[in-house]
Amino acid sequence: MSKKKKKTVKYKVVTITISSRQKKSLMNFCKSRKSTPNKIIKKAIRPLLENYHDLEVNHTSAKANQLQLFSTE
Figure (tube, rainbow, N blue to C red):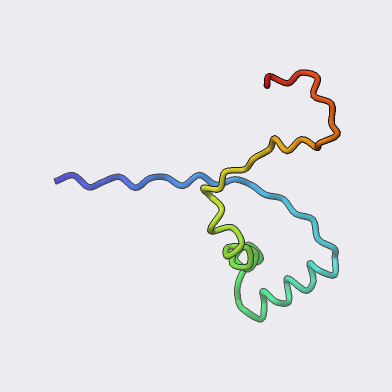
């Protein structure tokens, strides 16, 4: 019997900027929890992002008073 090959996970890079005070607070928090900044940040945003991977986003929200020059409608 052949085993099923695991699907590889694709990762993307996200960059954020924080102040030096926030960085110091983050590092102190990480030391107290014996963790890394990446793990802390991922754990914090995971509940916010879990339910949105299949969300359909509608980008065509034109204002009522906008002129439609090249509209296909």
